[in-house]
Structures are given as C-alpha cells and as structure tokens.
Image (cartoon, rainbow, N blue to C red; front, top):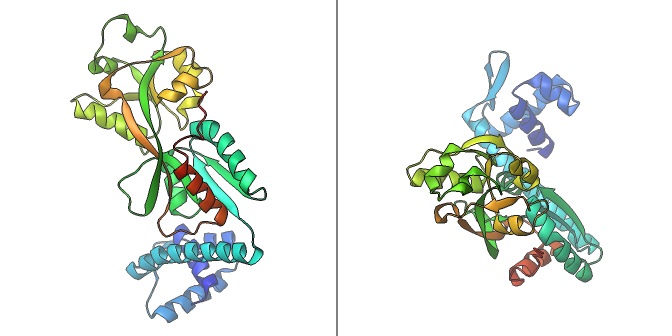
Length: 300
C-alpha cells in the first residue's frame, strides 16, 4: 500500500466527489481513479460505491478511513521524533489553552522554560476545551491546559490546580435587589459558551438537576472573559472563573451571584494523548506543570 494513495483516498472520502478531490489535490481524475484501484486491488475489495452523482464509502472503506487517520497521525509523530533525535534539538511545543489560562499562566511558565532551553519554540492555540480536545485528539496539539475530563481514556490528565467558576452579573443587576434563589436566575438571559464546552455542560446540568429550565442563551461566545463590558451594560448573566472576576481586566463593574448550586469546583489539568509523541521540550513543560503546585499562575 502506497502512503500517497492513502492520502488521496482520505481526500476523496472526505469530499465524496472525485472531481472536487482532483481539484483540491491538483491531480487528474484518471490519476485518482488509478490510485483507488491500486488500493482496492491491495485489499481485494471495493472501497467506494456510487450514490447518484457522488460516491460514498463502503463499510470496508469506512474502516480504512478510520484506520488511515490513525496511521497518518502515527507517521507524522514518527517524523517529528526522528527529526528531533537526528538534530539533537529540544524541539517544538504545540500548546492549547483558554484565553484566561494563557494570560495568567504563560508568562511565568514560558520564562522558566526558556531559561532551561533557550532554543525551544512554542506554538500557542487559544480556544475553548471542546475545540482544544479535538485538536489534541487529531495530533495538531501536543498538550492542552483545560478542566479535567474523566470520560475519555484516550487522554492522560495531570492535575495542576483547582479553581471555581461562578455566575456573574452587572453590579447593579436587579437580581441583587432582594434575596434570591437559583430559580430566580431563570427569568434572565445568559452569555455562555457553546454546548460542547465543559462549563456550559455543567451549568445546564446544574439547572436540570434542580428541576429548573435550562438557561436561555442570548449570546453564545467562545471567550466569555472578553465580554465584561457587554455583561456590565445589560441584564445578562454569565459564568466565569472566580479568579477572572477578581483579577481580570474590566471586571470592576461585575460581581458574583453567590449560590452554592451554581458554584462549580473544577480541576485544571495539563492533558496529553496517551500514545502521543512528545518532544523533549514538551516533556519538560508537562513535568514543570506537574511539579509546580500552581505556582506559575500569577493572578494578580
């Protein structure tokens, strides 16, 4: 089996159209047809079947697509490992984390790591944990810093600190004008992250567990910490880390809505793929985070 044929196969499978795949790969349709024929001959079975003007995978094709992604990822990891070993380089770190984590963690952590390895390079991706997990799973990232996920054996999470997330509102929000309960929050609309993000899941589950309707989301945003002025000028409620409320920029016009039922205690981890390759630099960063007891976070 030719790895180039496998690459062509993945593109054709993704697009479901031979002409579009030829255009994307800058190859002729006959060349791609021969590539698929070689794969089918090597496996002794059909990989595609006609579906009107499009083509779709056979069950065997679906299996090859799944295994092919794992194989391509393994090849990419091997290439990185061999290059690191051959050059003697400490390597590159591909790190994903939330905006708040980047703001309060990376200055101290990067400074400490550069003192040990001045030649390393760092690629930083900012995003919510659902997007970061997918990039970690696909091999685009080496590690991510986000709340612990206990439902996926594909990753190993090393705890680095514990924090709390709370409901927030503008300082003069009507909810503060009288004693309130969790049910009183249902009359207001919210600014929350997308449904796949762990904090959004937790908020929804907290309301459901108390027999209340789920929060009505009027603004969905992938970085709540960037919207304090919006929250301060409206009656919208939101949900962020308490440290962000206390030490973040432009938070002076916001305050916590204190309720035990809406206070989430979470463990922040540095997570890596269980079978993924880490450069020497990435190994060093993981170890520094595990040994730090949260000392790299400078909230003030």
